Image (cartoon, rainbow, N blue to C red; front, side, top):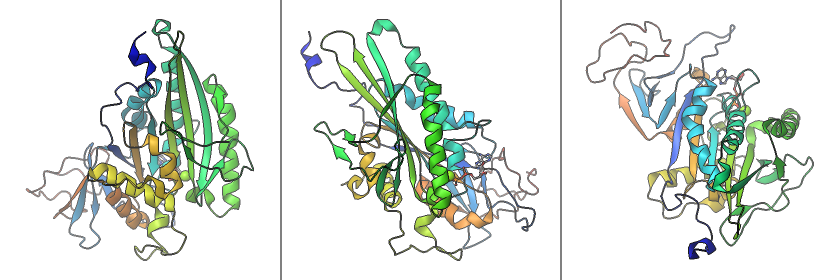
Length: 376
Ligand code: ADP
Ligand code: MG
């Protein structure tokens, strides 16, 4: 036996620092209503990493944003999964942690992205299927036994509630000596197949939706957190064990923090601020700026729970969902400012795309449905 086998097992590649949170932006299709005047979109994609939005300070300008990935309105559920989520899943089987979040204002497509529908399944069903496939494809000869389990919880008003055990009380969040975060008392169910997963997940999701309509749009103010845990154990002595966690999170609507009424941007000073969402944006900011003296994980329940799966050696992806209609303008602006790697004010009127402007070599936006959008 090698001495190294007696140490706490370091997950594969754990020494590699990969603490940045990858940021993808997904723009949903325009959904104009018949009875509203059709103003067209105020935001549009430029290419696979850039988009632009009208500058409200000056309509003759647009603000151009750069991200790790931009998914335009034609992007399918399959494409979002393949580019933003599938690549991180193999790490879970090797004992590493990961998290995928959907961020953005209510109505911009978070639930569509994470859950989807039976015709257009989202990230959650696709990721769970893929984890089962990956485990099935593992070679017996490697000597590991795999077991997959799930938990499903909600954070609402800084309370942690077990969605697999209706009527549960606020649960505590703890850290063990190895710095793993855990929730004693949270239901954790072993699942043996995708249909087994569905059997537990569907009723729990329905419970949440029904409760939400009674409780004043609770679903847009709470974070729904699905945990998929993969534990693998070596057949032979010393029976090494590794645990990999995958968090799939449909976040509360980001508009809660930033806007009251529809007349402008204003931070609510009351207790109505969603502390967890606000802290998450600080945590992502400090991880991505690389200048963090202290990452404020402990300031909220959500970030405390995700401490071992966000930053550090974990693989994290934030999918920021935005909507193209004008009524979302300020929410979109705040979501983009939170998500962007960089932004640039460009002196080019949004609606006059056919005018050739030498300073900005505007790439033809593939999915753009702007007026006069075929010039240059
Ligand atoms: P959120 O969860 O952020 O509040 P939803 O996912 O409920 O937003 O989306 C709002 C509406 O827009 C829903 O009717 C949803 O089906 C639709 N929608 C969102 N994203 C897309 C998309 N990419 N393609 C088609 N429809 C979408
Ligand atoms: Mg939703």
